[in-house]
Image (cartoon, rainbow over all chains, first blue to last red; front, side, top):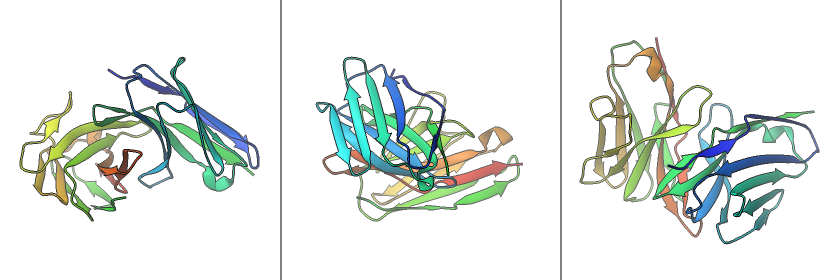
Length: 109
Length: 115
């Protein structure tokens, strides 16, 4: 089955860029997703990328996809304290979402 | 995209009892998904619920422990039966929200603590 890996923690200073990385084993997913989970809340779809794209930019968010290396990243520009949350990458495997472990982003003022 | 109302948002339950979690969607959807998120862990799919048929459970999850109802295309319930402290988790429902991104919308989750 699909295996999705993320580093568990990332700490950055306010105003810096954050880069959250994700690697996966199964490349059949048509879409790859980034979800955000704030403390005590459900999951919010942050952004996504179609598998035939290399990059997608959406305001402060940039998603990079390297299909050869099976590597997905999420860059948050000008990171704010409100960006502190857990970020999950997810792939669609046969209609089911497979999640990484989540990366806890801590933004220090 | 679809909007999901999930309740209760949290509960503290005695071991050996059962809790039923409800999810109401503001539009008709074919499939609803139930996930478990154990403390500090990622999300694991429990089962997929289709209207008019029995839910399909993932490996490690059984109907006797997690019975699911899907009476119509906008509503589903998940029951956590005969609870033990190991069932303390966040439980989330999800639906396929369609659209070009093929994304999924999640309920706000039910934080369950079993004492």
